[in-house]
Image (cartoon, rainbow, N blue to C red; front, side, top):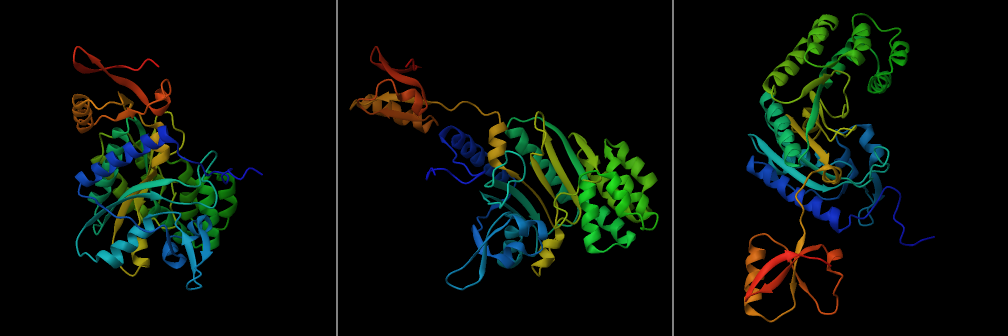
Length: 381
């Protein structure tokens, strides 16, 4: 067995990709800071009860667990940072007003989320706590759109849904928790035949409404159809979606009323952002007021998160080659190196004896002396 072989779906980030990831991380955290979001850095390891509070069964299955040898308690390696940030807001900050928080850190999953997915995403996100109004949801979706734009990606669509709508219909159907989970799974797969079986004994109009959800996706006309086929009990949820879409009219908004990812801890509007050429969602988000309530502090909350490693792979970023400088005691050369570094350039000193290898170290230009001046030229070898 190769002792250097990493576990399945775990990989190193090598220099070229690491540079892209770190460049994007710094830029996006600066964007968050410019909007008033404060950075928090939760621990990688927590007591499992804290990590899973209010997060539902799916996160429990994704969390690695181990026994703390100092206390004997079960610890968890975080699989999602959002519950940690909710804990920080509820128990450490204790603010009466609005808190805008952001984060970026590694999470670990017991299984990859999909084909070719890593089990070690670098999760970046932003959250707003303390405001229950639609204004917070508008701000969060706009911030997400700005993040994707900065990465040079064209947002093809942002799907909106509402978990409250599904919760209301399931309650009207009178089904238990286990049956509700089966209905949820069938809706996510848009498996109408299974839905028909699961809802065979459910009363109307809940049965017809749940069967209609898989077909309620598309443009603004979806809301018109939804008002025609769904019962009056979900009108307030449709109003929320309409208000949000109206405020975001300059973005490629669409609707998917069976979009329920994050159902276990989301409580209201949910959204998924897609980029051109990417079949899977680049970012997921929504409102999760119930998580704060589970921590004993019923603070409204909304936010989004994404895998920064995945985003960096797709991002269109400027080239970032370094300048090679000869090893020399020339004071004029040293002054020029300092000037270039202060201007944001990477300048690498050419240690003696390694001619012809500097391109593999990331150098694409070199400093050459002409007529008593140091000038930058392309690195030819």
